[in-house]
Image 1: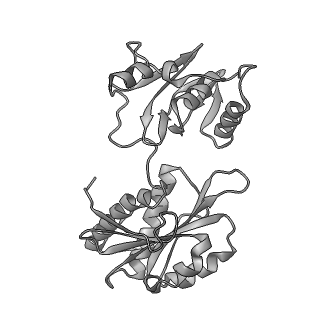
Image 2: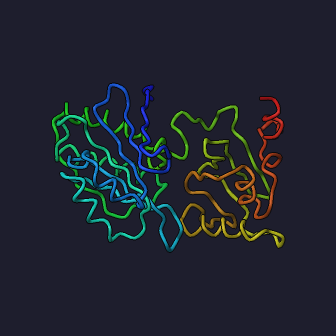
Image 3: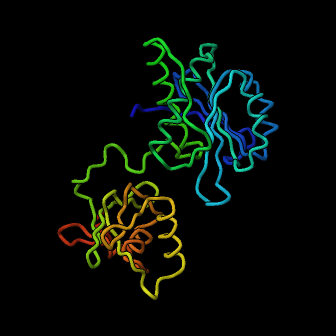
Length: 280
């Protein structure tokens, strides 16, 4: 990933309030705000321009992250139309500081963002795939650079919608790969920036222990409901990479009951995660 110097401006001195973000030597600009400050966001002159935007929130029925990705020739007018959408609690818009971002460019970016967010799978998306637009080869390359900068800014602005659960550089044969085994089930995983990731193909026990806390049962049921876990050959199998808040929550899911992740996760040579932490 290209290195970047990011300039973050907080008009109210609050990182959760309205804020803007720019990257050195990049023609784009991001403006983000909570829904409670929508009127102030709409008053920004940047929203007179073409751009793309992301509405972020939570599905009221499933409590899962939910998002809407869109584009507009005049961002202000389009965002006004989304007041009727109840789920979203924050918005992030991206524009160009010059006049070189056209309607065709933002349609292309919308399509690329939707495709990438769908592939990452962290958020349920509130719309179908966009049609995009045909651009000359040079313009497509420019938009890939623009998209790369969006990827860098989104986590800074509070969203991991384009952040893969498992980073590209992660290898299943890495020295820090950890295993959690119980009965016939075996899971592979490692620490991640957000906690702990369990890899696709891992298995967990199907039956929960009588002593399992309710949060463990709820977490396993959520993973089943969203399709991350499926029942297969008397076990639960992960059909995609899954991120947990901690090694212990991951281990509890594997074992069907409360577990200490620092001792449940081990390298192939038997070294526990706790021992690895103490070596660091």
